[in-house]
Length: 365
Length: 77
Image (cartoon, rainbow over all chains, first blue to last red; front, side, top):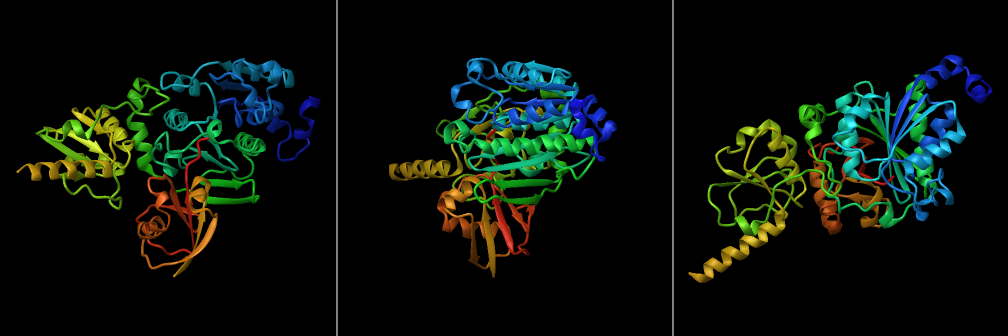
């Protein structure tokens, strides 16, 4: 066993620790910038079973940071290309490549086959899917994410600790935050953040040190500064996910829009009768849509304030940008509350439109 | 009162700095955010959470700390 001798001579690991690593099953979502260093170190460390899921193919612009790949990988599926390279690195372990998308349909079955989930994905839709599926299957989730020169690392759902939704309850508007392909990223940054994730995986398996649970580590590659922020657990965030448990697989994983919702324009419903307008923004958010009769139920309180929802009216839900309103519709639909629609315009557009319509009708008199 | 504001990710791009000290009178995080929003109108509609003295807090929390950080989610990988 000379391969792992540098581990085994560490008194904190030893043969017992190395055996734990050999018996561990780790599932890595995404074989991109973060996935490559995660997979490389976990393979070298001798993780017994390593699952890799990625539907994407290797492109030339990936090679600047996705260090498992070379010219010969171009055009190949990333999970398969990664497996080829990793098998050369360590053929003592079992590596399973899944050249497909992670979805609401396959995630639970896949996660159930592994002990630890590692998120190296590159979009919010997948990140929230990974978080929710990790909660449902009760697996620890090693999280990492990057933006230009900055990275975030944490371990979620570990020994009753907080989840990603305790930190960021809802997925932001898909267009509000660009990804690496649109804005660029310093090539070495995912190497640093992915290596930190691999380190957390090994600490969890070995039971040594302090796992980064309940904390978010923020790293800035330009200033070399790190900040560690404390995250408190929100039972509500867990309950929101667990309520979906039975229907989770019915969710459509749409990579353009996290939640499917009946979308409608304010212009189509302005004169409609028997309608309840629901503002799901937080109380402090402006502007107030004061030219409509509005029921205020912040999204975070929706499920505990269902009594405010008028079951006999058509529910027209809005928020700041049209994203949270879609989530609200999704939540209500899951609770079997019918006739809910998401207004695609945000509050300021709605306010402006209603004002214009009222001015028109005043002039007409 | 004077506190230090720290900005991460695209929030720092909007404010054009990673850290600054401000003088203000506000009781809650939400009130402070109104002050920050009026200084940086482009922060409107940006998604972020707030940490007070390195602990993430809800927007209705009273300001008791010396350091407030605005933290956006990152998606990249």
